[in-house]
Image (tube, rainbow, N blue to C red; front, side):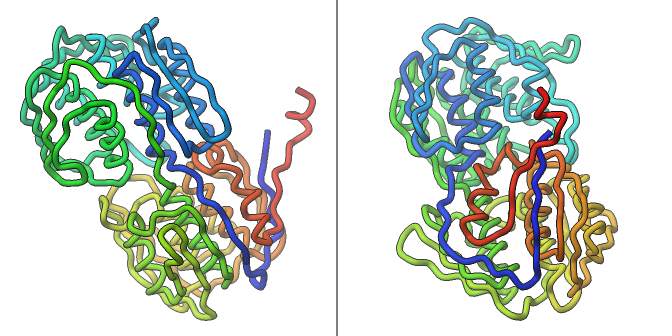
Amino acid sequence: MEKIRILGSPDRPLRGQVTISGAKNAVLPAIAASLLTQDEIHLTNIPLVKDVFTILTLMSELGAEYKINGNCLTIAIRNVLCHEASYQLVRAMRASILVLGPLLARHGKAVVALPGGCAIGSRPIDLHLHGLEKLGANFTLEHGYIKAEAKKLRGAVIEFDKKTVGGTENLVMAATLAQGETILKNCAQEPEVTNLCELLIKMGAKIDGVGEEIMRIKGVSELGGTIHDIIPDRIEAGTFLVAGALTKGDIYLNRVRPDHMTTTIEKLRYSGAKVEEIGRDCLRVQGSEEIKPQDIITSPYPGFPTDMQAQFMVLMTQANGTSIITETIFDRRFLHVNELLRLGANIEVHGDKAIIKGKTPLSGAETTATDLRASACLVLAGLIAKGETIINDVEHLDRGYERIEDKLKQLGASIERITTEKEEKR
């Protein structure tokens, strides 16, 4: 079993440059989109993270052939050998549900395991299924699996009851090969959704309203191959911005999209950090001696991202005063609070609100990551906690951060990945 060990200090600023990887949440639907064509899809700037290899394992089972060269992926599915996404893979990564729409659109049937619960709360897929039913799909539920069939998907008007990133992506992909026009209302507007739509357009899809709440998709008979660049990961970039502000450091972030991070940057500036754009794809963050408290409410893009909530909670433990974070996207996304309490944080949770009282010195302790972003927040806390911090279950961290310990080490952090004796004996 691998762990992360950090020797932290409240007086060790991070300094230097870091290159941000491609967005995990953009590459996963892009890989699923390769199911829509027999031709090769070439994706550049892919992050080499665990979730990418998980979905590639699934795609291989479905019949995909792929090769990775550096941070470039070439993938093609000439013939679909299987229509089933197994429970083991869907359980490991809920984004596996994104194969449902493409499989139905191109092949007329799909069998996908129900995702079940999630460490950060329930994320039902009813919005996916309701939309696909309107396109003409029929569903049955047997032994924990969704069995879907559709002789031919047909365009429809679909309005999501609430914003859903995965639901929007699944329905857009399905609609590209549906007969006639599909109108999607109340679409998610995240940059990752836009990046997927741009890929689909390059493949030959006809989509109007990309990046807007209403999109119109005119179905085509077939899609082809293309080359597509995955956008930078705005959550990884936000995590390093917080690291700079938290440690009173001075960090340059290369290969970023500041226009995708407006709310995160605004909140960091409000806390007292200096964040400036250097050219088109570089950000510089300089931490302040005094961190100001603030109230934060998570909301769908372009609001404050739920995926940055845990990282900002660590920052607020060092603010001079009381802050309140309200989580509106997922239930049970405050599991990291108990681990931060072990490090000495003063946090109270009341329903969907976390009340953080600062400034509180943190001290190193052994902790356990409960999910992807919780693991990142524990890394940040370990940087400023006095003494040694151990983070267990780092497979969560590896799902979405590419070599985070190496990147932090380049900035001056004392951090390493360690392997237990049990793992070494294997």
